[in-house]
Length: 191
Ligand SMILES: [Zn+2]
Image (cartoon, rainbow, N blue to C red):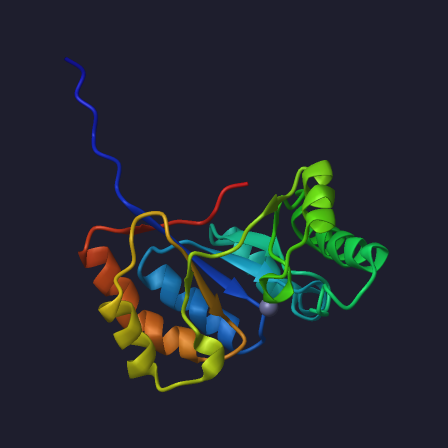
């Protein structure tokens, strides 16, 4: 009988709206300290402003992904403009890393069928989330942590945070060791 090692349950941390000149670097240090990998849904305009952080994300083993160029509401702009938002950011990522980005999350997670069709045609995966940290509410860190404890994560969860403020760092300094102690592995999404 061939013995198969049980696969470790996985969580996928995702960070939207960066890179931020102050917080993204601090977050990368926290992730490195815990050997945790994550996916950064970055804005093209911010990658152009902070190319070294974009490069660091990739060099440290995380996934760099597309979150539009400058975060417009996708239901308020034309299809052509939406496609340009995607291409402009993929170009910024390609310039930085020399790879074709195959992961996209639309601003505020707004999807429709024409957007999804475009992504399929381009071979890009649309990535939503299964758990929202609600960090955009800017509640006290304890409250954010408590919500995860009251409603525990499960294997395969894609967890939404934002790296344009310090709340993700404060909360994850507590949550990451907790999740790892529960047996979860934190990995970057693969395209
Ligand atoms: Zn966003």
